[in-house]
Image (cartoon, rainbow, N blue to C red):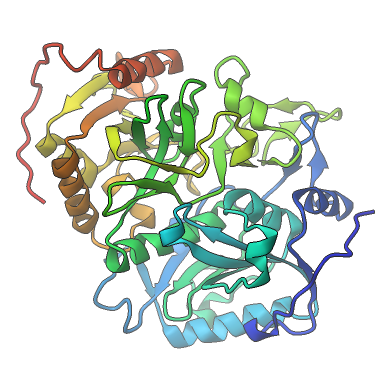
Length: 473
């Protein structure tokens, strides 16, 4: 049995009464508790395998932001940022905390943003132990000394087993993910998909950083070369952000979420990686493959009775995932920060097979592609998406951007002018025909093109202008 003789805290100030609080448990303890409760299984890798239930991807139509005097005039309201009544939020929050009261809950103090000047302290309250293990992996981990006087600024309350009543609670259906900037709460219920936890805080930072910190938040991965040159990779889930930034010859800063400061430095929001594992192999992606060990969480994969994982089996979902702390990757940047970017790569999975494998963009073209964000939603990353669907996602991350896209585009355009960064458009999608006719770009070809751009080999060759775009943000 697991040793639970660890420090505990009271969370009654959150409205959760008489709970059995498991505070700041180690990854190993949470792994073992999940197994003991029958909520996970051991794999041959040593990692735990869990099923997230009904939802195996995000549910964008069930993501809400409380409309109040902080958000009313700043949020870009619409189908992406759906308003939620503050009174209904308070009532729903009370229902969720009553549901968690008298239960065993798992609480973790952590923080986001690797740059000390931007650190955001977070308290995460989870109904399930493996959800808390995910929080351990994905957020930054305070030292024992930092925990002594830890003061959480934001709180994540995560109750997958709580089902909302749409008519009474104001939700669309029984699941929900709601941000409340006045109360500084991310409230998640009715879904076990762990990605909602990290994306909730990411969305909050996408509001906080540009509005209050003059810092550009980015849905991108980043790494650093041996000469200190930083590269960033924009793209939606499934376009290759994690894979292409995890390079044995470059130190990983992070795989998904970063800030670009007024001082022109880059920092990771997170303390881990959340990678797709569909068709994963040691040969194609050795660093990610090696990161799957004790401490990692495999989501919605299929394995045999001996714990051997079949990464090609998508019978549960095409959005099979692994979560692991960043130190599972050998070649990482410590702390997770970098200097001013020298190269920016826009990763686009072109479902029509029209875009060239690589293009060098002028500032006008770069601004156009950033604000339009053409790509294909890859199967499984959202509920209902079963094959690549052409999509325009502003800033390569519209589902997580609370402000109007032009705000982020203006900030990026200004950064490009200040720094003279080279911007490249990379097609990680289809060539010689659209999806179903052409072929998906091979990873080794994409890596070779990116390496050529990073080395400067593509800086002095002749280019053919395909289309000239004059775009002002």
